[in-house]
Image 1 (cartoon, helix red, strand yellow):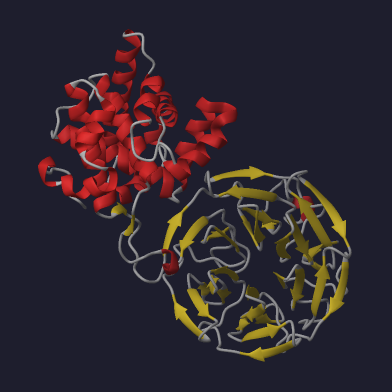
Image 2 (cartoon, rainbow, N blue to C red):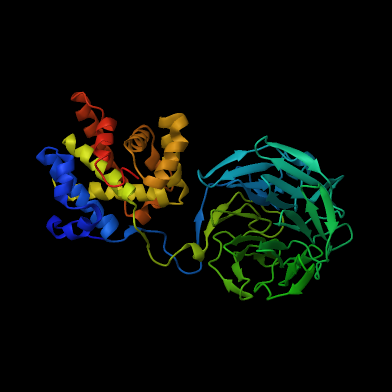
Length: 529
């Protein structure tokens, strides 16, 4: 980190070429001496920290094999679910519920649909499937979610394969039945390529299916493609570019007959080929793609469930072992949102077991192995300077060059960085909830502005007021999410107290803090951009 205690006189060469001499700033501002001192301190500090050197936005440690983080648990415990991402959210559909009086009539086959929002780390229950399904396939396209095939109950059996296709509209929160598959099957894999949905493999009423059938949502029709060379069920599938990869699985629903076979399909040539095997033979798995790398999670065998995470790099036809899952599971769902993979539900032991676990995998491609460095824009610098100048006009600033002054500047800079850059749900939720509660219809515009330019007096007031009215520090994850930015509760309390004091002092004088801020902002870098 750039040292927070510094000698001002040594820093003029850093900011002089950028914004002109401080004499020019003095001429523009023309404030009382205390305000000039404050502005000088703010100006030099911000420029030194943000522009003359890299602005450090610390991230989580990167061991080179990814990291895991526990997220909000799903509302219900299930296994043999299916999931997909749609509109920045994750949908977990069907499966088996824990057996109980409420599920006995359906033989525990679930029609549940639960929506997870990674941006807020919250769940919502949505319209149920028209029928209960488990071991189905799922994919999204064109703003719709498609659930294809699977098994349902029939008399006293839960292994009746179906050919059904159900389309979910998230805006209407409703389901519509579409043209069925030519072949009834469950424990299949479904992926989207080029606006078409490929239903691959699975298990029908007689045994493993090698069927590859393609659904065209626009035409609501099906066609048949070259069959899967190795017929299997409980496999995973993923796409990189225009290629489809069918991975692992088992023979005839027997997890003592797990496979490591991986086969790639070229839709243009309508041809399959064998590629590098999955290092660990397993089935009941799930797969997700982040930046052209396929990640395969979980699975089961007679010996137990797998915590294994393995990554396939298609460019070199090579697998790599990643950091294992915290919770081994089979029959689980996964989906990628903003280059993070959410791995949800599934059974923690072979066979009939259930969980509502939600764990987020951060791939190594999203971690730098060191702290990310980026330069702040003039607008981001200018807003911090303007806030400090407004504090100074109210006489609310700590003594110049004191530890408290440096902590205040650090808090402004690093909380701005955290709210702009952090992907931690608790940090993102704090800003979102604060803006929504205090700005109402203007919240989204304020959030967009913050992402581009950082603080305004309005967004600072919204966050300070929100934290004062809610027990945010008791909520799990917030302080953990702020750790990479080297700030915490005490830093925020100093910032909040300074703001509250300045606002109250100016009000007594008949002045409004936001008006004072706006006036100072016009004199600062980035004001005309």
